[in-house]
Amino acid sequence: MIARALSLMRPSIIASLLRKETDLSTPAARGRDRQRRIALSAAASMAAKLVTIAASLISIPLTLHYLGPERYGIWLIISSFTVMLSFADMGLGNGVLNAVSREHGRDDREAIRKVVSSGYLMLSVMAVIILIILAISYPLVSWEKITNVHSPLAVAESGPAFAVFIAFFALAVPISLVQKVQFGLQESFIVSLWQCVGNFFGLLCLLLVIKFQGGLPWLVAALVGIPQIAAILNNIIFFRTKGRDISPRLSLVSRTVVIATVKTGLLFFVLQLVVSFAYGADSIIIAQYAGAVAVPQYAVPERMFSLISMVLGMVMTPLWPAYGEAIVRGDHAWVGSALKKAILAATVISGVCSLTLVFIGPAIIRLWVGPQIKTSLALLTGLALWKVIETSSSAIAVFLNGAEMLRFQIVIATISGLGMIALKIYLVKQIGVAGIPWAACAAFVPLAAIPTWVTVYRWLAHSKKMQLSEGAVARVAQNY
Image (cartoon, rainbow, N blue to C red; front, side, top):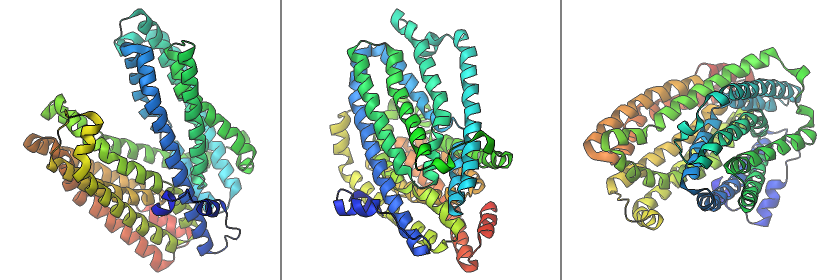
């Protein structure tokens, strides 16, 4: 699967990926079509990520030179808030994704339209609430104190820059829903193409702002707002062409769909919070128990290894809606086969890449950031082992998302997260920053990996044995 996604430069392969299956009446044909969509989505996602990285590499020195240290610091603070975008919709976007993939498996376009209509209404209400809060709080907040700036220009621009960001942030909440719909329909390659467009024109507008001496709010509008304009165009074009029959209508909003989507969405939201808490505390733990000076000694090598999970994640994520659609259709053989291939591919590729970085990682880090970052074999081997465990587990998590086994994931993530944090604190005190990945491995395997493997094995065995109907599959998933 991954090798196929990485070899898309060959014209014959591109042609085969663009060629749709004409008859999807058999499990084999549906399986081939899913594989085609997954490979196409993975390739487009990689292209979008490359454009994003390139835009970032170009924009960072430009904005730093143009803004100066203090105003650039405001921009970095604003940029750090973009992480909140993944939480902005309270998980409702993922709830819509799962609902769309489920109804897609039933070939029920009218039901998809109700899901889409209900999702847009809910997220539009959330966007309005965010804008109202902004309007009320804006004159009451001392934005220059939040950013701790002192120059007259920085003080004058800090408030408007935050206002522009929050306004586009609110706009993104409902506008980005089309991306979840396209993911649910296994057409995430469309999302990636529009992201490429948005990032390209965002960078172009950044250059224009610098050329015409625009202020920081205009830079924020260029880098944050232009991608949202691209998302608006995605909405308009998609719902007027390919998605015309599922375009949102206020009259199709369903109370039942709203309740079901909110329930699923809140589970996704809780899961996101738990995972973020469990995996996002490393720098804090190191700073508290080894000193802030030790944070870069871990963060830089970890960022290097994180490229492995980032690339594999782009390949694995399109499997999420494919699993959901295949489960509803009863294509359990394909689900089992795809899951095994995904786990094997993630394990082998992450293993080879991680082992390679153990040997050449110190040289890469020296070339990247200089000699000030000192690595140890204990840290590198710990990161390598953790990356293999993490990526193989992520391949399973994608299946669990598609099968809506969310309560199970929340319980496992909470238990393993608390265990990892406690063990990380202990090992950092004992052996320094190298204790972080080794603690993660030691706690995650017994508390999360083994229970997850057992649960997935039981699910697949039960599904295969009983050849579960759509309703029975849903009942099995609800047990978790």
